[in-house]
Amino acid sequence: MREYLLTLCITAAVTYLLTGPVRKFAIVAGAMPEIRARDVHREPTPRLGGIAMFFGLCAGLLVADHLTNLNEVFVKSNEPRALLSGAALIWLIGVLDDKFEIDALIKLGGQMIAAGVMVMQGLTILWLPIPGIGNVALTQWQGTLLTVALVVITINAVNFVDGLDGLAAGMVGIAATAFFLYSYRMWYSYGIEAAAPATLFAAILMGMCLGFLPHNMHPARIFMGDSGSMLIGLVLAAGAISITGQVDPDALALFTGSEKAAVHQTVPVYIPLILPLTIIAVPAADLVLAIVRRTWRGQSPFAADRGHLHHRLLEIGHSHSRAVLIMYFWSALIAFGALAYSVNSASMWIVLGVVFLSSIGLILLLLPRFTPRAPRWAERFVPPRYRRRRRGADAQAPAEAGDATGEDATGEDAAGAEATGEEDESGERTPVTAAASGVNGASAIGPRSRIH
Image 1 (cartoon, rainbow, N blue to C red):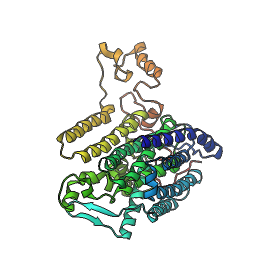
Image 2: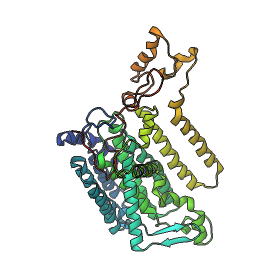
Image 3: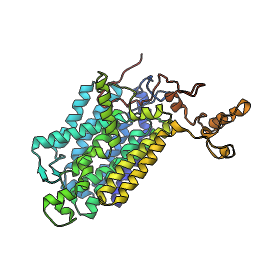
Image 4: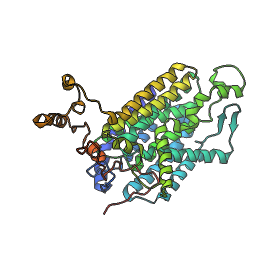
């Protein structure tokens, strides 16, 4: 564990220290998109943050290669080299897109080639554990197609949520943390060496996200761009692919019996591995909903719009920061809920805990629709948005209090108010044309529109 933590800290430190110089380089290179009507930020913000994240990945792999225990991962497996090859290719394509906005089909082809490069070097799915059947061996073509599909879907799912400051890095960091705990348990508790590469990938991914987040939290000073979002999506998919189909169910030693029975009983263990989208369920749901919504309207599935989940949170009244925290909450609930279920699927307390936390999440989600008003005697103890409105001179107090804290009278920051509109005299929200979307929130393979 100490070596994993050291690798994580080195990756985070290198990413954090390089992000500042990368920001200056992005400004000089002109990698700053124009402000569009659907953007939340009001000032041009440089991207290319993926450059710092890629060098953080390289530093993490280099350090791990020189550590006593983690060096065995490089000796016994070619997967770290496969990851580095695929990551370098997808990162290069992302850098070119951040600067020159390359064609959508070229990006899609690049994602497939990057996945193919990893497959050629051994990072692929060999078999799948099917409940009631047992381990089903995959042919070379089946394994390759499934691996490429998982990589492409995960990359675009991550990129679809890269629409608010700190959203993509935070959600992927949460998923990586849950996956690290899971794979480390498989490697350490059960002595399964095949889980060691996935554990290393998860630790490095956590460091990349943690190192970049301080620069990317609202208000962001730099965006990760497609070079960053596609990179962390590929690393997340690589960790799941690395361990899927590599573990013998009987090696878990959970019970005695046939392999068929073992696979059936350990289905909760395999769920987060077979389908990595279970630990990034929120981005995956956003991806599916966006494709259905756009095709239903007769648009291209890769056309940018204002219908993403984080856009909806801003529209119903959440501020920028609060919308990001709500997305964090749901991602953590799904990721760690799946992790707890894989540890003990028979515990009713886990199910009840998930249901209880889901209820709290729904209340927080709908809170702007039902803003309570505190009684007069308690107004000094609550935020200004929960105070009753007064007439005359007293009506300015809540607004002044809100200005003192950097928020308006409704508790929304400038970005949130700009994205959601203001209330008119009747209390109804007036829609505005400037909606909410990050610079990279359209699609990993979709073009960006320019405003001249």
